[in-house]
Image (cartoon, rainbow, N blue to C red):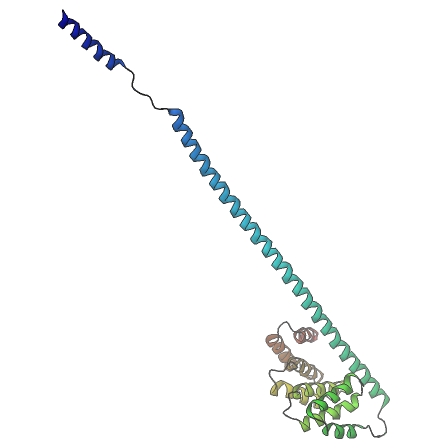
Length: 249
């Protein structure tokens, strides 16, 4: 009887053990962990996108500021160039007008300030003073007839001067306005050939073209104007050369 009872109890215990439910994992906890990981990943992506947008906006702002600064510098340079061109035209117009007046009025009697005496006075001055005195005769005193021997005397006294190119150009301009084309051509040609780095070379080439036109040498004039356009593109002399080319028929 006891054996039967013990056997029955043993069997019941085993059945209970087999029938006991297995432990179940918390599915909700795992799902919550995955959701949190995705949220953090999305947040990191959003933060990176915001930083990139901020950096791009900063670069755009910097570029816009640079454009504004460059635009302001260009406008200032354009204004200064325009002022220089206007001043140059005024000087040329004034020289032409007064030269015409001198031609219409004829010569004058010799005096202590005749061209010959002016040339002698220039020869007694230092290099810088002699050049400045000749320039003053044009720009300040407007004594164009006297300025011609003044520049000639300066060039004879100081042929290797740093002002020689400018002096030759001034001399050529004064002679050109007097319609002394042969002498003017010599002065401008000297600038063209002897002073290739001079700031007056382009203008001298344009004047040589104008003289060639007056002498009926249109092909030579076109050659000179084309050379100015090629070597001094964008300069005031190039624009004048272009205008002269358009007028040649």
